[in-house]
Length: 208
Image (tube, rainbow, N blue to C red; front, side):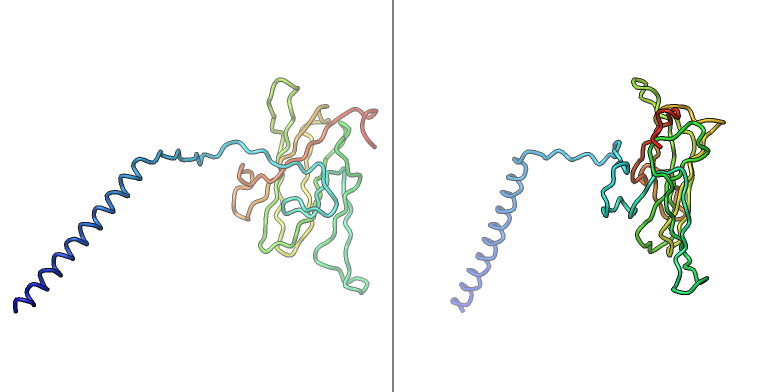
C-alpha cells in the first residue's frame, strides 16, 4: 500500500511539473512576440489607376476582352453563311472603314469597332469621350457617352461617339472604355479597362 501511494504521489507531481513547464513556455513565446517590431499595415485604399492604352496594338495580342479594337470613320457589316446562300449566321462580322486616330471637324460620328472573345454571359460595353484641355490646365471635359449590350453568342460590336454641335472642336480627345455585367452601372472607375486617344484637325493635316 505504501508503494502504491508513493507511485500515485509521484505521478501527481509529474503532471504538475509538466503543466508548469508548458505555461512557462507559452509566456516566453508571448514575451518574444512583444519584442518583435510591429509591421505597418499596408493601405488598402484604392487610389487613381492608369488604364492601358488600346492605341498601339500588336497583331494577335488580345486587349482585355477584345480580340481587336479599332477607331474608324465607319464600318461594314459582313454576314457569314453556313455554306448555303441565304443561310446567315446570327452574328454579323464588323469591319472598320478607314481605321485612324485623326478626324476632320465635319466628321458626323466616330466609331469604336471591336471583336471580343466568346462571352459566357451578356455583357455591356461603354465609352465616355472627353476633350482634353490645352497643356497646363490638366482638365478633361466630358462630352458624351454611349453603351452597347452584347449577347453571349455575339462577338462583334461598336460604340458611337458623336459631336455635340455642327463641328468637332479642334484638339485632342480621349475615349475611356468600360466593360460591365448587365444590370451594373457601366461607367464606374472599377469597370474601366482602357482608353483610346484621337484628335480633330483641319483637312490639310488629317491623315487620309
